[in-house]
Every structure is written in structure tokens, then in C-alpha cells.
Amino acid sequence: MKYISQFQKALLEVYKEFASFCEQNDISFYAAYGTMIGAIRHHGFIPWDDDIDVFMKRDVYEKFIALRNTLEGTSYKISVYLDGQSPYPFAKFHSTKGTIWEYPQFPYIIGPWIDVFPIDEGDEDDPKANKILEEFHYVMWKYRKSIAYSSWSNILHDFTRLNILNAFVKIFKKIRYAPYKQKYIEEINHCVDRIRKIKGKTLRCYSTALTNEIFEKQWFEKAISVPFEDTMIFVPNGYHEFLTKLYGDYMQLPPEEKRASHSEFYIDLENTKTIDEILKENKDLIAQEQPLSLKTIWYEIRHRKKGYLRNIKNNKKSE
Image 1 (tube, rainbow, N blue to C red):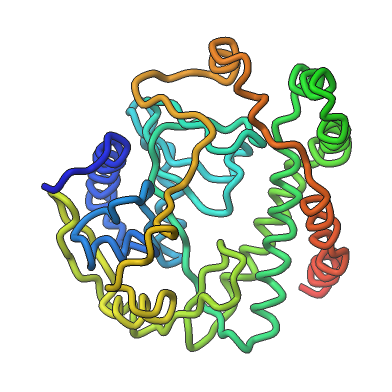
Image 2: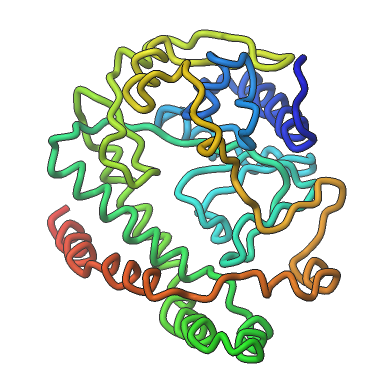
């Protein structure tokens, strides 16, 4: 096995448990995105990559998340927004050991993980599918605000650092969004119910906000097992067509300035810690949280398209 980082080794161990869990429960999956490139081009991780992504078809994905309680008592867990803590529109299979705080905006800490993306039907030129894609991410956006990290001690810290705008935005989230978390989860589920009913000639991933992620069904007719470090992983039979559409000449290494990995807010692979423990040991860590910029505020204003919410209400009345 080629050299891989300590983080990649931890991810690989989680992946092996994930693959074993899926095999035991007759759950099929495919490597996705950079993980698919890594499997084909490097027979393992892209050297600078630090995550593992997989696809599951909707019916398989729902079977997968329905089994999350079977992992109780183990060192692994399946987390999904349904439980009211995960800020992601897709599931994560993760270790309960180790500490990764990915974004300071959310009080969400887990161990090394696998991202699990559901794929559904839906054509690119289908206005109904595109509308639901927008509505799904609009409601998910509100849900994420309802679980944003806005403890009073954190808000006080913003005031003492003169990040006045940050502090008032967090207070606004506590008042405007936090009380309605369960309502947003129900609205997300309503969008998912509508997604299940969509039929089309192609597949798409509604968990990403990109309308160009349209895949031909024949690309996912069969799973092919290929080497991945010291184990194996499945890729779709149409991996070449998939990767070519998304990345062009995927066998060509990108220029060095584009070989970027993710940047997690806090990582400790050896110990399992709470937010309070992290901040007690690293008192200046939260100071690394960037103040809100005018660009970010403008994006937030543009993103609040009330038409999405109106569409959701109208669809509820008509169904």
C-alpha cells in the first residue's frame, strides 16, 4: 500500500466497517466524486484528498438510514438530519471515536466519516424536478440556521471581540430559526416525499445544489469492484462517462495550486471531546471564526427567496 496520511488511514478503517455493514445488510453503493477518481486513477485516495464519498440509490439509501439504530453499542453511527443534529442534506457513517469539528458555525462533532449521497430520478429539463431541488435546499438552509452554533457564551465572546454583527446575527438565529427546527425537518421530509415520486430518464443527486449533476441510468446499472488502497470499492459501470462529464480528462492530474484538501476547524483523531472541552483547552480557537463579510450577508439575502416557501405551501395544498 502506498503512503497515506494518518487521517486517510483513519478514514480507510471507517470505510472497511462501512463496507462490512453494507455487505451484511445487502446494501449496494458506489464510490462518488473524488473517491471515484481516486479509485480509478490512484487505486486509492487521491493523495491530497481527505474524505470518502459514496452514492446509494434512493430505496437503498432509505434502507441504510433506517438501520441506524442497529449500530447502538458499537463504535460507529449513521447520522442524518432527521435526528436534528447533523447539518447535512445527506447521511454520514462515522466513528464515535476521535474528534472532528468541521465547521465552527455548527455544534456538530463526530469522528472520521463516510459521506453517503442518495441519488434519485429527475431530468435536467424537468421544471418540476428543478423546482423541488431549489425548495429542498431552501428548507435545508433554514434548518441549518436552526441548529447553528449560537450559545450565549459564544455570542458574548463575539461582543468582547467586537464582532458585533456576528453576535446580532446569532441572536437573530436563536429567535427566528431555532424554535422551528422540527418544523423545518418536516418540510424537508415533505420535499423528499415529492422527490421520490419524480420519474425521469436520468438520475440526479438532490443533496447537492447543482442542477448539472445529471447521470444516465445505464451508468449505474451494475457495480464494478476495483482496488482501493488495501481493500476494494465499488464504482458504477459507467464510471468513465460519469467522470468525464463532471471533470473532463479525469486521468490528468490537476495543477498543483488546485490540489486542495478540506480544512476542518478542529481535529483530534486520538481523543473524543465535547465542544466545551475543546474550547477550554483552546481558548483562542473560536477567535479563528471569521467575521461576517458584506459579501456573505448579500448572499444570504439573495438566498432567502420567499417564492420557494410559497411554492412549498402551494404544493402542500395541491397534494
